[in-house]
Length: 210
Length: 341
Image (cartoon, rainbow over all chains, first blue to last red):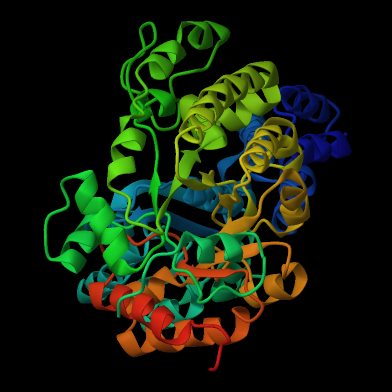
């Protein structure tokens, strides 16, 4: 039964996963078991396949939709305290950058690896990031940019977070098409990752999570 | 440094016919601001455009028919009760949306007059590169990207019909463009990948996009002109197929996505490589950085021909003009064959 759920995640079978989850619950599987041994394992495999070029953005979106459907089905059965996120993550495209598919994929990967995620959208000012850090207390802040010109706003955002006295409260990661490790180092980011799956690995490493 | 335009050097490079007299310069697009600063005048007419490409040292001008791009990409309200197209939802979700979409209006209002006007303005030696674009891109824009992805699973017939209809429009436009005199090549652009790989599966692209590229390849062959294909990103797994379909040249070889030196080793003599000068260096580097980069590119990839140099995407308005100038001057200074760097 857990195998059916895991396969539904891997194949992006968002139409049938609800029934598989209900079957599992009715047969005595706990939400904790379903989440850890079926849903998260399934998304982990999706991440591996995405990183190795076996599946692509549509398949990842379908798997994410299956994950979301499964979680919604499980929600009435979950006691709040039994499912603790491994960390809190906020992500957005920096000021003047309007592309969001990349950040959506990263958010999906973080969520399906047990993070609580808040997606701030696109064209996010430094002030907005600061406001969210104060209100939401994330462990990791993700900054994304698609263009060389908007990438420069990552430096500004980090500067303003520092000036606001919040720099040591968060780990800051950067990513996007023009971004490199060298640039990340230059602007004082804590981490850079070239893709959504590596981003999760890097985030876990920054937080000391295995 | 002045260089007389000669499209033959471009043709020689694009078709991998050996070493031309020098490495050609090539760009898909240069922002108007850059052109105006370069020329020290406003670019207002087609004559001004020709003056830019000629003065900067290119052997061609690339042109496209004018068409309603907002309509073809779904940025306007056109269908039933739907208001402005949402970036994620688009304007086509159902068969009814498709049936009601004013594709005919796009075709009827296409304007090819620029291909007539250019005939009196082309300097000797320069030719026209006929541009077409975005069968895949317009199709997913019409759905909205996320909706397109889900439609690939739930409504593949509709996706197929949209891609076919958009393909018909774009291909017919291209057929008419190449019917004009002085067309030296076709340049088709359609992003199918990013640095991490393909946006959608190669199987989908084989079924829905590559048949159109094959038609373009056949059209190019029938006119005895090269076919250039532009896509961002890493497309290594399909390059052999694209060559079979009739692609002669690939642009822009983003440095983060593919290694141009490895491509030259594997495809030298079969595929011309265009672009590769990192836009990031053009934006944030110094003229010395640009000169070094271009010299290394010439030294490593130019021998044997099959190389045209330009930016690794296009020249946007935030590129430093002195870096752009350095790129083109370095090619002119060091790009004569035989290469002696």
